[in-house]
Length: 66
Image (cartoon, rainbow, N blue to C red; front, side, top):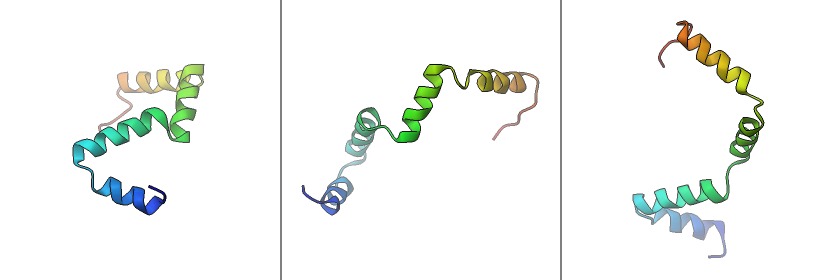
């Protein structure tokens, strides 16, 4: 496969199960920049305070179901 169009056609021809495997592989091996940044922020503890506040807000009834 030499072009993006060939890759797109090949992906379109996959079964749903094969496509799911491909997407899982892509997530594992080629994460989106936002995913990598979020993981780095989580690992560094940069959003721990926000998480604690969200959990506290939920426990005190300051949230609502989506």
